Image 1 (tube, one colour):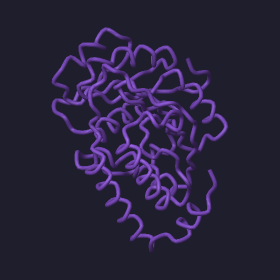
Image 2 (cartoon, helix red, strand yellow):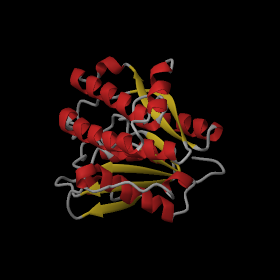
Image 3 (tube, helix red, strand yellow):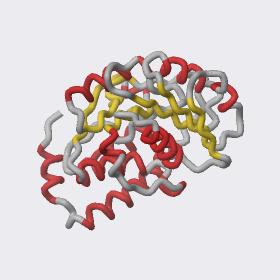
Image 4 (cartoon, one colour):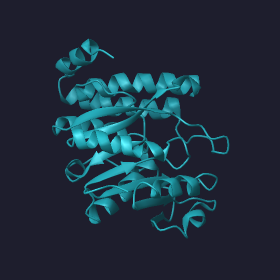
Length: 245
């Protein structure tokens, strides 16, 4: 459990019956306040966690990941949480890494902390790796700073940021919201830190809802709009190109 600060873990879930219970149970071992957002699942996702000591938010129909994250974040803000941890319900993020994100937050309280999947990254599908690297460059350019694994959903958000950020969270922005928050955070004066983690790919997990070509294209359109609005942010591009690993 966390110490003096109150944390909420948000787990968006759409048809995650095979993995959601184990993810939720392991998360509860480290965070006392857990919100599972069942995004209109057609399987037994909700039933698999109904008896656990967590808050279950249910969407009557599938609204996409952005809406699920937004619903969970609003629930966390209403509960008075100091920071929000997000992780996927398919088991690819290990809840045992949560204390490492929290430790980084204690050192950098005005930064988003990303669980960056830089360990055993070769285990990810090749197209997925290419799409992620492509998105990293564009998002980093728009944010004006180097961001590692901009597509990782395993993150810690400080509440002061979530209270101020305003980004679209409808179905059309399903996999765009997480990238846009990084850019918005930078413009609001918040930083971004990365904690290296290993990506897990449980054999029982369903196929990813992320569509590498279509979703990356949507992210690039969003980033292009942001860059055009800032005169292409040449200073940010220089920072990214000159950054060292």
